Structure formats: C-alpha cells, structure tokens
Image 1 (cartoon, rainbow, N blue to C red):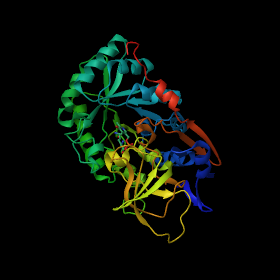
Image 2: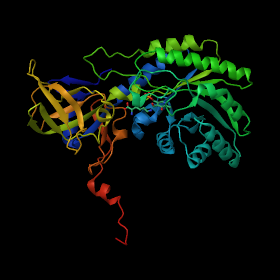
Image 3: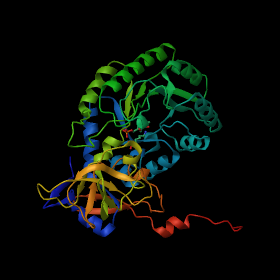
Image 4: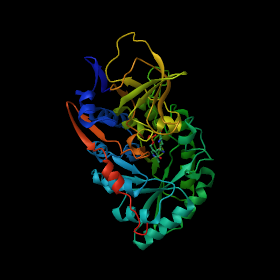
Amino acid sequence: MEPFVYRNGEMVAEDMPLARIAREVGTPVYVYSLAALRANHQAFVAAMRGLKAELHYAVKANSNVAVIRAFAALGAGADIVSVGEMRRAMAAGVAPSDIVFSGVGKKEAELREALAAGLRQINVESRAELDTLDAVARSLNRTVDIAIRVNPDVDAKTHAKITTGRKENKFGIDIDLAREAYAHAASKPNLRPVGVAMHIGSQILSLEPYRDAIRKLRGLVGDLRADGHAIDRLDLGGGYGIVYRHQSNERPFAVGDYMQMVRQETEGLGCALSFEPGRSLVGNAGVLLGEVILVKPGAARTFVVVDAAMNDLIRPTLYDAWHDIVPLRQPAAGAPAAVTDIVGPICESGDYLAQERPMPPLAAGDVLVVKSAGAYGAVMASTYNTRPLVPEVLVDGDRYTVIRPRQSLDELIAADRVPDWL
Ligand SMILES: Cc1ncc(COP(=O)(O)O)c(C=O)c1O
Ligand SMILES: N[C@@H](CCCC[NH3+])C(=O)O
C-alpha cells in the first residue's frame, strides 16, 4: 500500500497531513505509517502460508521500539545483532524464545546476556565464536541451539557495501569450511548445532542469487546429516529489495515469487524455515521531511539547502542511494523543472540527499518529502556537526504520536564530560 499520497494538493500519511506534523513536531522528522508497516508484514506472512516458517524482523532496519512492537503484536520474532537490539526487542514485547542473534563479532558479555535471557538461537559466524559461546554456555550450565551462518559465495548483485555473501566479505564461515566447523561445534558439549543460516546481502532485486545460495545450503544440509548432525532449521536471512526509484524500471521480485522458489528448493528437506526481512517491511512505510532553508542558484546547478542532512539520512552519501524527493505541496502540473542538488547544511561536499535532480521551483519554507526512508534512516543517524538526533513519528489513520522526541541541544551537549584536570 502507498500511504503517502497527495490529497487536495498536499501530501498525507494515511489521513494525517504531513504539513501538520512538520508544523507541530518541526523538521527534520521521520514519519512512519502504521498501516503500511502492517500491510508489509501481512503480505510477507501471507506469502509464507503453507511453509513451516517463521518471520524474525531484522530490527537493525528500524529499531524504534514502537515499530518493533507493531510487528511483535502481529506475531513477528526478531533478528538482532547486538544486545542493544535484544533489549529493544524485549522492550517491545518480543519473547526471547522468538529472538535470533546474528553478527560477525559478538562479545563474550553479549553472548552471556543473550544466553541468560534465553534466546531461541545464536547464529555463529566463526570458529572463535564457537569456542567463546561454548565456554559461556558451560559457565551458565546451559546448552544452546546454534546455526552456523555460512558464506555461500554468491553474487547478490547489489551495492558493494551491502553485499555479504561473497568470499571476500567478512560474514559467515566459508561454505567449503562448514563441515569442519560443524564437527568442531558438535565436539562442544554445550552447543547443539540444529541449523544452517545465510544472509547474502541487502536490497537484492533478483531471485537468482537466493536460488543459487539455497541450493548450496541444501547440499550442505545433506552433507551435515551424513556427518551425523541433526539439522532441522534453515535460516534464509533477509535482503529483499524495494522500489526506491518509482519512475524507473527498478522492480524487485514479488515476495510470492520468492516464496514459491523457496518452496521448490526446500521441498522434502524437512527443515523449519526462518526469514529475516528488514528493509522490505519498513522501507516504503517511512519518509523524511526536511524544510528548505534557502535556495542558492549556482553556475553549474541550483542548490536547495534543506534542514535534513547526511547525519539524518546517510544512504545517498554512503551508497549513492536514490530516494525519490517530492514537495509536500503538490507542484502545479507542467511546473518547469530545474536541475537541482538537494543538500544539507553540513560541512561536507558529500552532504546531499540528491544530485542533479530535476525539481519544480522551490523556495525557503517549502517542505520536501524524502521517500522510502523507513529503513536504515533514523537508525543510522548521527549528531555530526552537533545536530540533535532526528525525531520519529508514527501515524495511525488520523492520529500521530512522536515515538522518539527530538534530542535537545542541552541533552546532546550534556553527554560530554570535561575532566576536572582541564
Ligand atoms: C543477518 C541479517 N539478517 C537480516 C538482515 C536484513 O536485511 P534487509 O533489511 O536487507 O532485509 C540483515 C541486514 O542486511 C542481516 O545482516
Ligand atoms: N544500511 C544498508 C543496509 C545494510 C543492511 C545490514 N546488513 C542500507 O541502507 O541499504
């Protein structure tokens, strides 16, 4: 569903005018639609029907406790990469038995807290982690269910910085070394290797890399069973792409087609499946609002300086990511377009939300809507240039709640400590 549409010349989120949120909460601000979060979740779950499968929402994509709760209330578990995310998930009401802990560098203290909480499964990414986890489990007198995340060496054909399933990426254990790793795990009395996990990257637009990887995992499950391991879980990760550029031929696969492929490729394997969608549940359910501070005509192009910057949304800077950007007030049909850079106030040339973008005439005070900002937006925000962390708002029909208030400058600065010897 598309909750962000023009109504009477102004963009709304569901039945809430975005202008009202911009006025009452101020800008920059992230706005999420509860109906869209729910619709995305429901579409995923509907596609899973008939499979023995569970959904663990990848909390990293948007870890606001209210957002996690929206999914938890619908029955979702959580995929986490830190005890910080674990605490958020539990604060949102996710049962520890529905939480899976992934991550390439879990610290001993994190593993201890995770085991003490009673998480469902730890996805182990290295031999060293097997040793640490076993020692922690032993000290707690526990036996822990594990999957080993294998690196299947497939090309997910996504941006280099968000591909995770190639040999040269730091993630998982090389699939060629997996049998040895499982033997090592099985030799540890406090570890119970029950599953195989993968996650090959993010914003993946085609099914083929998934199919290739699942086939490799299927072969591995056979080998592991032949080696005597009772493997009955397969964690297929997330990575499902969304449309960022609506006026283009960028079209990700439909979740129904993905599940159909999974059904075929895992037929008869006898494994319970787990999926870890992040972006596909939240990405298009959120926008970032920024107000135009000033317009600066330049020799090469026009600069529109807005109060939302790379510290609020770093994706354009970090990945050259495209986000559709439209004025909150619907431009007149046929309004002339000027080649525009939409930039923030930060002292970095990389501080832009869009470059060389045709935009209708804009003036100070106009509010811009940066689309598809619900995933990896607020969670990656920083306070660079001493800019307070951006607030977040959740809309439900014709009401809204600030689900994270804007940090005040006083709070931000008060976090520092000046030594008494200075
Ligand atoms: C282990 C794991 N699972 C799930 C995800 C979610 O990915 P996405 O937001 O692309 O669905 C990630 C992030 O890429 C991840 O590292
Ligand atoms: N932060 C990335 C996705 C990384 C996924 C986490 N492994 C993005 O905005 O696209």
